[in-house]
Image 1 (cartoon, rainbow, N blue to C red):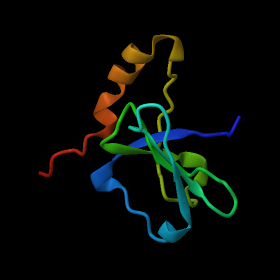
Image 2: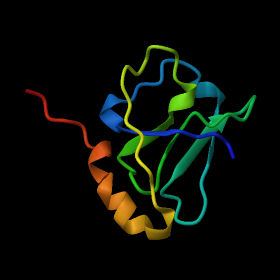
Image 3: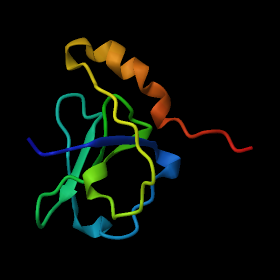
Length: 98
């Protein structure tokens, strides 16, 4: 219902340019996932997911126009969470430098 379009990126490729001081963090259950949202408006533009704790899950709908030039949307079967998570595990790993 929040309109989140998940874009998983390695932590090494994520950089928040401003607004860190306005973020509020919320964790629950295991505390692995770090849900971050704006303390003023409540928008959740990115978070650290439980499934990929070494990466960030960015809401692609919050990106400035032109930031992402190409994106492939893949369905995620929440009824088989383990298999679906394993299928996208590579997305939170930074590619090796040439």
